[in-house]
Length: 248
Image (cartoon, rainbow, N blue to C red; front, top):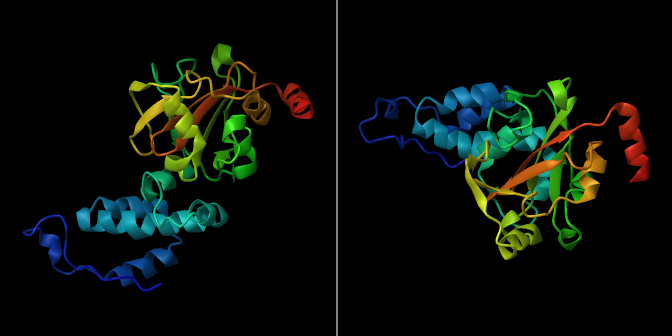
């Protein structure tokens, strides 16, 4: 992959890091050998705005393409060469469970956010989270990140996802038509955009709980203006959840 070279630091004209920058091609090859290590990319982004810009445009994109190649190919198949909310936000969504803080979006439990080693995202699972009117939308949803024995709540699951071309989706159109209100204070943990509550908009189908193996009235999720999704549910005991999948 040949990249257009940018040697000028975009931090400021007087920034000392204008001298001695490696070319983008060299940095690309170094991080390719590191298999797009996310910790190294995040560290490089802190050096200056030139490196931060390079990470946003190139490195995080390559990380996403390597981590979930088929998913990334599909998300870009509509002809867009960018991702809603930027590549860094999508990269974080792939590897970070947002959890929930006290008095946060899901006030039934307090679980700190954390990185996850590996998560499966499924377009097929995403169909279970869409209303019938939105059947042509494309939504990728992760398996729930299980947090067991959370006090009175029992076993809690956190899940996350992303819409393809959310700006043109029927789900967004329905939210606007319903006059759904954005959350007054909480923001998307991945891109810092405002959030819609799908529960308040009455846009959580029963099939979502069945897919998660969760109690029917416990599933709750939000979608941000860039189409990132984050949700929470109370998981059924294993024997009960197996029965729920049979009913589905």
